[in-house]
Amino acid sequence: MSPPKVGDESYESFSAEKDGILSSLARRAKTLEDAFNTLEGVTCNKAEGAMYLFPCISLPEKAIKAAEAVKTTPDNFYCRRLLNATGIVFVPGSGFRQAPGTWHCRCTILPQEDKIPAVVSRLTEFHRSFMEEFRE
Image 1 (cartoon, rainbow, N blue to C red):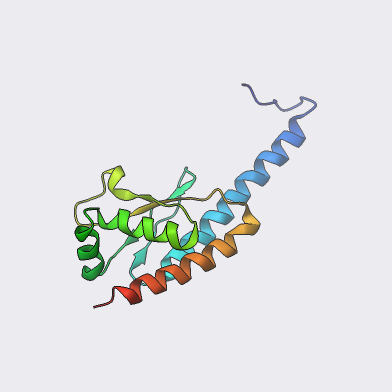
Image 2 (cartoon, rainbow, N blue to C red):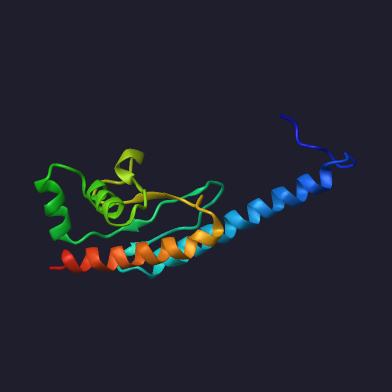
């Protein structure tokens, strides 16, 4: 497919729509990045050129042992618990060649912009509860 070119009848509306979508994605990414970086034991870099964030989660040893007890990776354990508690889907970072001993999750920035605050709220509450449950 070829986008409209400058001077084409639909160029201005195409350009405005594209700019609006990209601006919205940037705002969603920034909101989620900021939210991750406020969570205990979580660090998150900027989304650069993708619709994903990969927060790094420092999981308590008790959570790592609980994951091992059910024969799964700690990041998968966290993601499953998140899904079951909130309906939010993260993909475990162990499928993306993360460095050994680190735990990441892949998160898309695709929910509609007006839904992001609710996602952040559910995620924050889950994470606080998870960390409290597995605190040593």
